[in-house]
Picture 1 (cartoon, rainbow, N blue to C red):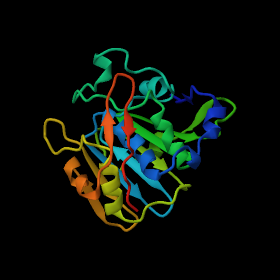
Picture 2 (cartoon, one colour):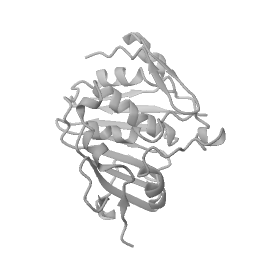
Picture 3 (spheres, rainbow, N blue to C red):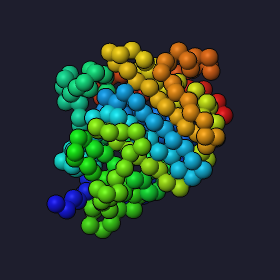
Length: 238
């Protein structure tokens, strides 16, 4: 079966996305990690090279139909009632902002590789600021869909040729990202960890929100039925 990925958003809106949309790379990364949290991921891997950033998670992933109906239907309501406002596995209050956070990757790169799997069902496409006239995104063949850490299900987003300056130190990335997520936990009943590999080649893992307090937290994340907000944005280190 030939897979098609029609995106349901105005191409003009996509063209407006770019580095000017966000003032800091960490706000972009936080949006994408929040999507992983909403997918009931236990682990998120953030990998940085000289020119690209990859985010991979072991969440529920998406089937081909879910990719078409949910991921590519931007701003489609997903929290209709109390039940749909929480995740199915860990009963987490959803953080995502009405389906638009997924587009944050386009603020980093004008060409983003999106790959996802749910069991044996694989999907992949190129998300770009310039959508083909057909309205369909360029598909990625199943042979070219790959993951570094995922086996059963999950999603991988590769932001190529970053237009942001990519942070060098793994520890700095860990400290800054941790400030956005009080949900970080090594509790078996609802585990959530962020693993970072920076340009310096070192690996850092954040499993507890309290670890970030030592780096001067100045943020508050609130939950509601419609969206989450960051008040008094975190003081980010360089």
